[in-house]
Length: 121
Image (cartoon, rainbow, N blue to C red; front, top):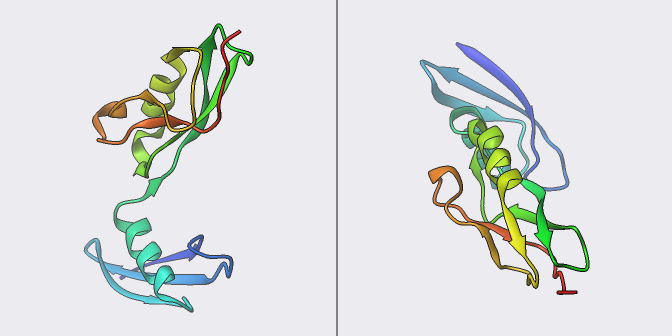
């Protein structure tokens, strides 16, 4: 039986969680003080996901770059490819919070959106 030790990031408690796996399946989760920890631990050991934050180039704006993030989590193993797509994105001002910078990034079904406004100069 395999054991994985995690620190939960689901809430501010930061519980030390132990996950026991057998043949890739979760057998038990211990150490969490809430249901968020159980859900986080199960997902983290079987299908880890992350929200990606970065910046993208803006042309003709009052700022040279705009902060962006994935609208929801993406598979952790796609982070490098997602970052490459974000890095290749070039937008033209104006940009508003929530504008889609990259649609369906890396075929994940998740859009990358702007997280601040950039005015046209």
